[in-house]
Length: 75
Image 1 (tube, rainbow, N blue to C red):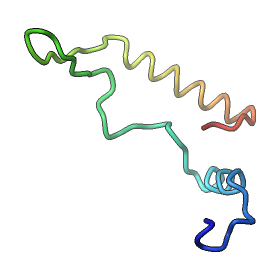
Image 2 (tube, rainbow, N blue to C red; image 1 turned 45 degrees about the horizontal axis):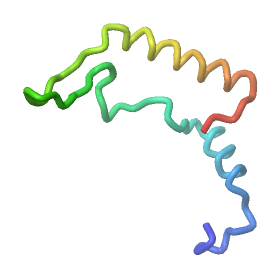
Image 3 (tube, rainbow, N blue to C red; image 1 turned 90 degrees about the vertical axis):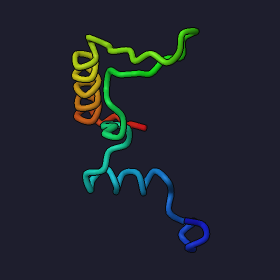
Image 4 (tube, rainbow, N blue to C red; image 1 turned 180 degrees about the vertical axis):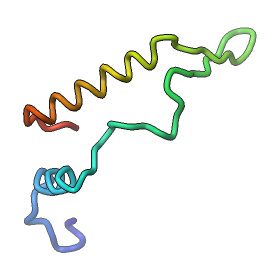
């Protein structure tokens, strides 16, 4: 923003405008499968599945929705 000559606009203002336009930071991560991780073990790489991943994801999304409703800024 400084290079574009917009240094007088605060970062918070940009964040709020993006939020009003429907953009959310960190809410979804479609680039990685939820509940699956590859771990290094002595015997080699092992794929680990979290059986409670969907339950945890639902709680996190609910927390985001409640925070937005309450007016808390999310980073």
